Amino acid sequence: MNDDVKNEIRKFALQNAFEHEGKTQDKVVLSKILGTKPEFRTKVKEIIGEISEIVSSVNQISLEGQKKEIEENFPELLKPKEKIEEREGLPPLEGAIQGKVITRFPPEPNGYPHIGHGKAAIINSEYAKMYGGKCILRMDDTNPEAERMEYHAAIKVGLDWLGIEFDIIKNTSDDMELFYEKGIELINSGKAYVCTCKRDTVSKNRRERKACKCSLEDVKKNNQGWEKMFGKFKPGEAIVRFRGDMKADNAVMRDPVLFRIIDEKHYTLGEKYRVWPSYDFAVAIEDSNDGITHALRSKEFELRKDLINAILDALGMRKPYQDFFSRLEFKGMPISKRILKPLIEEGKVSWYDDPRLPTLEALRRRGIKAEAIKKFILSLGLTKANTLAPFDSLESFNRKFVDADSIRLFMVHKPKKLRVKNLPFSSVEIPNHPKNDMGKRKIEIDENILIAEDDAKNLQEGSQVRLLGLGNVVITKVNEEIEGDFVENGETANIQKIQWVPQKNSHEIKLLIPNQLFIEDKFNENSLEELEVYTEPHYLKLKEGEEIQFVRFGYCRKDSQNQAIFTHK
Image 1 (cartoon, rainbow, N blue to C red):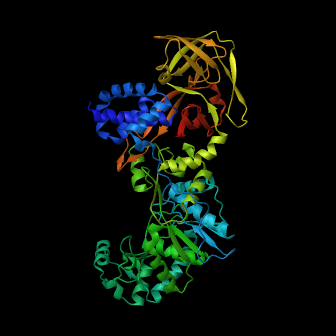
Image 2: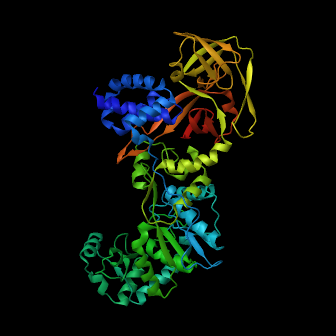
Image 3: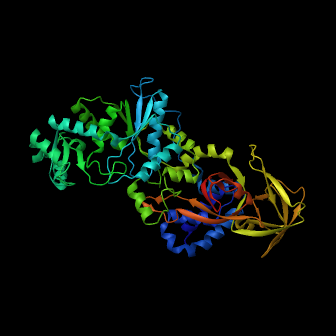
């Protein structure tokens, strides 16, 4: 193994140890190496021994010693982490009048809600509150091919979890007759026409900025075509197009689709309708009709602003103020259904609540608090600059919410038995939180204690170790078995402090550790670690969903009686 690889391993080991009170683990360093250097995935057996030696060496260095080595050899590790600039509240809204602002959040029920939906919903809801106005939840359900009640329900559950309250809840499909009325109005005014060109021809003409022969037909012919769309024409044989500008640089304006035929059954309306409005047409009519004063959307819709205004001008309808903000994604956690759906279908992630995903269900299951998401999103403001945030920027907000209420428990990985002689008591009471009054828990003990393998590696005969909450032990034997004598009034300074669990009633759980899902554009095969760990019996008394801080490890959420999920450090 060349020196560059050894150097990289030592760098990761020092970084992780320094961030976690001077100790790191083989598996953590291996995961980081494989994550940044995929070529080593086929050479795990070759590097695991080297990693183990380097980790052991680093763990024996004091925290100050680790910092000194980092300063000398890897100073870039001490640079401040990338951080999203924080701000308080949202900027003033142009043209807003106190008590008159009406905003809306119009999600399409074609997938599970993610952090991007959360951002749009929170911004629209907060602006309505800020100006004493109203916010409408409008399910944009006019594409029966893609939409399902499952997604509709998931969006509602996600928004409820975020604590967002809406003044009006409706479906876009509630207004189908209104869309037909406005569609006929456009046809009769000559501002829309029925096109029977093949899809490829329509696309080619739009690219070449050429009008098709259908655009030359008169109002009578277009009315006949409109009637045929409700019975005679098959899907794909006819569409209604807006008479825009085929020469426009903005391709959206080149005679876009207003209506198309879809014969799929709608999840609430069944087969009542087969001619469905396009997104652009529906949102234009709905925003005007619902009295929306400020239509705020993510900036991928910015090019559609001209079209929406043109449709409303053609109909003589009121136009809302439109503004746009950046999409929100986390690095290595794409929000696109096009990327996430295949991962689920191929079994690479379990479901939309997999803790590696940026969906609202996944974030909740991971232990991210709704309040933290809200604070984080509001700190970003209404910028149009692309927001590809590091996940730890959300973690820093979440830490403020979970720390005060998280019970502290001991947990050990790869347990080694430590036999402690001369124990003067059979139980101990330990505070559930170092600062806040969260009561105490009683742990029944005998001489057989379990400690983590990484801590056991550093024990030496004659040295003292402090078992947190229990007391000091002088190590007397470190061969196949580890033994020690309990000592009263032992040392307190410069002594190794470790967590432990009683062997007789420890509880084994699986601990899931989500890592970055994608590294650059490649799926990270090591994005989910599974550790078999042992914790205190008190774990069984906690409610599902309760947040825990495993001492010297990090915050975790109880997922079930036999499984917990790592939230963050």
